[in-house]
Image (cartoon, rainbow, N blue to C red):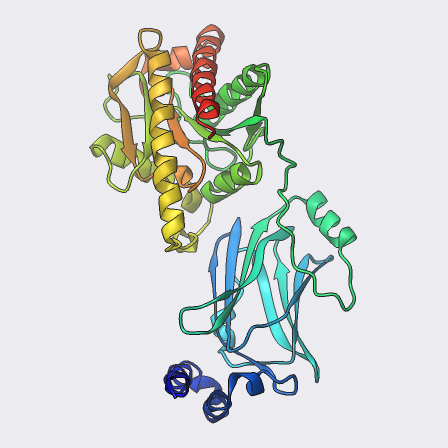
Length: 413
Ligand SMILES: [Zn+2]
């Protein structure tokens, strides 16, 4: 009896949701029969709600089903598409709820024949599904969750080549894009700005920040790669634009253990000079940090991305715990960098600051943003362009990373 009441309540909720689709009476009657009957193969599955969120680097699609859907994923080329095959399904949500955005330029869904239905996601670039699974929702519904992320053309070609078509219901595997060696400590170096986004401009030499950050990142990668058991990867190694989300996604795909974003910005107070290490925080430590984060976060907008395309914050208690743990490691890393710099490299007052930098938001990778100096200060600008100074700073950063790594490995992290 309890079950019947629950079913009826669920029916009313569903009813509201799918009123637009005029499937109400069908749903209620379907819900009032025992579960084992309404899962019969001759009844189509009901997909009663759908939503899509995300950006050009990753996009999440969630579709709510009344019953657990069996599904199969395939990848198709020219143009790149992801195909989701389902049993016969009644799509009881408005087409607008699954309007293409983020990685996808077009989304279609409908019946293939009496016993099967299909969803076709046409991508703007090569993609892969990092996650494709059915989760049970709080109200007894079943959610098909598809997390798409950008992929290299090679990886997409592999997915197409290695897949099997046929009767078997195969789901996307969760293999990493870059084959990661668990024993290698991976550091993602992120040269700030790039391409259309020049970043700050040197007052004396007019050198753009994007060139300085790239030179630093390349040289630091070279030094880190000489360390046994350490591997450095660059989010970009040419003068190209990357959205902030792409930078984070690239680091995550490389299974990075650390993320270091390199910058050399300007300040209106030209006399301020020295290095600063930033970690992520909802609340900025001070006005300067707040302004700087606001300017850095404008990068995506500057390149024509819309700010409202940011991926949604996922409310998840486990993710929250991960974030907190990651935050502690980020702060430890910042401490190691400052210890290395102390007495060797000029630092601003209170050299560890924090603010809401988008690029530091990987929930599972300890991340810092390093302002190496200020291009608004002529002395700093001179140092930033000096090969010897760069080599010295990079040497100190290698020390800091090594000490961090030794402790992380000792603690089994
Ligand atoms: Zn910058």
